[in-house]
Image (cartoon, rainbow, N blue to C red; front, top):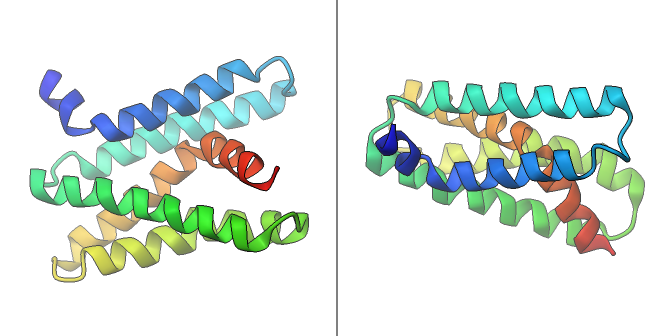
Length: 144
């Protein structure tokens, strides 16, 4: 259990932040929004762990680095979009949840087998889905 905790430590830190944001803002969220965010968090975390469980340690740390590069791309997109709400909602969510993880993971794992590339891309999408509250709060902090 401790080796599993250590292997996924950077992801666990992000998940704790995401869960903390969900719980901290539960009073201002509607019940439906709270349940949807909680379901996205749980299914995204479970999907990420299931897809990355058999990844070798070296490739797993490459995944951790690539995920934070994705977050840097997301922050750059938010800064470029500025306060344009339509661009942030219609362009930011697909970019943050799909385009950035697919591009970064495909480039980071370019020399690996196709199955490993597909698993890491899907795991990155699941991870970003589970950390949606962190991405939303970071967007609000960057824009304000």
